[in-house]
Image (tube, rainbow, N blue to C red; front, side, top):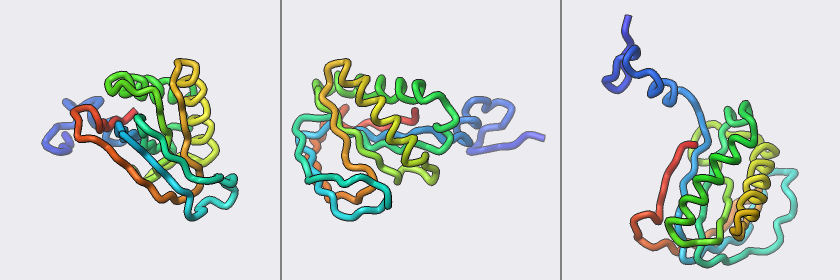
Length: 161
């Protein structure tokens, strides 16, 4: 018996149906003229103290949702996909500053705090080795954000990695 999803028969959908079922890392990237944050409310008990806020100019701002299923994969493969996407976006926008922001609001599924932090640190190392200046927003805090993003063609890019 054939199953239909959004008008596509299962036997002809193949990889499409698999990608609908599978939860993978989501990334929403903005090119920003300026991005500022100020830590406000701690929402993860064991989160380290964040220090003060920061303002970063001329940067790629990546809102990253690491999925629970990403933990089943090799962290190096997840890091490579993320870094390649961020480098491509940075090149398209002539930016050397990259901001990694854990944003657990792009899906119902989320990876552990520890896995996400490990992935971000590995991505930061690889990006810095490639000549980028990398910033991470504080983990485990709600932040006040100020975003100045232009309305350019490649200033906003969504990806499932």
